[in-house]
Length: 443
Image 1: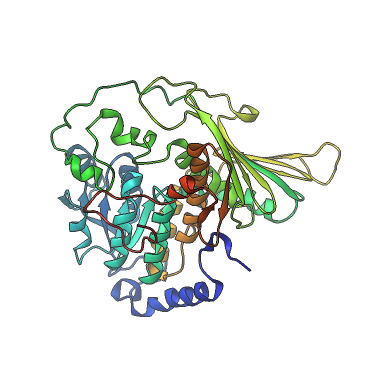
Image 2: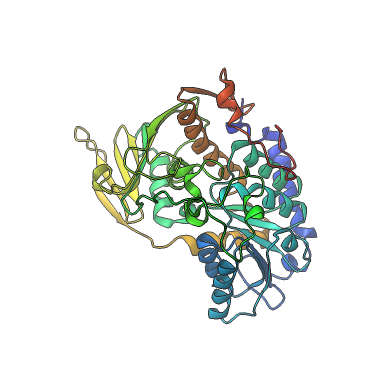
């Protein structure tokens, strides 16, 4: 039997899992001095931050809510972002960390145990792989990488070096979402026929068409580009709006799409899609962004179908929810978002009771706590790299189908698009010299 997404042959996966568990005995004082989730006097976890923009600041603040975490160094290419990270440490009444611009100086340090990577997507893979090689555990923001092949390289590095790596899609640790997914998996919803995720975001306006210009003072822009193609500085290709350019990210499909697909997969079998079609375009926003503001993607999985759709600039979504996910079973439907989840029985059946369940609140602290516990116990985290690679791959396939304007057939065993060379090329990426990525299968 083929394993989903060809993540690992089963025997190799079991062997690697055993190695991960066994590595705790040799992991040094950090692990020997403390039980999972129970900080002790010698159990400080020393954090290095790589990327301190919006997500990095939120994650840093959340990490420092845990008393055993000390931030010892912050790396960012923008002095203004570094200053905001330092302010967070000061507000938490922690020791002022060192600051550097080059992320490699974080990985060189012996006093860094864990690394938070909250860079733009095109800078996820290289620091993660190098951190694993340096013996650091990693919390890396979603999506796992800019391409499928980069995600595979990150997974390979984590396995070879027996590292704990968690992807920062915090909804995986949301209690009411866990409960809804368990309801689906219990069979009470009946046979699953279809799932859907959607994001209608009226708070995403046009970003305009600013001209290229010199980068602001205090920014190492060439390093910010890193492995991405050389391009003149443009205010829209930087900070938050980098998401809307193919050189650095995958638009809403890999941004909100990864979050919501992740929620859906909590309640579905771990399967690879057989085929994908996607259509859309820029129908709402008039600006210089590249990724579609409107997109609908349909996946054919072995046991069900899945539909993803997003729309920027509009806020009235499916069932009057701006965003959410739904599972459609033969006995009823579950609709879920951050406000909670609702069971809607099929009208001609009487096996389910309609019921609404409230939100369990912000899941980010629980997601970070799960990672820290696993750093100490050496157990695999709730959103380990295998699942992170799976959900990111599915999102990337949606974009590959959209960008090539074709229905694509996915060979999960070889991680290749069948019969379409243009689409298959987008599974990987060419790096700008001198940057390279170890364990990349295609060059």
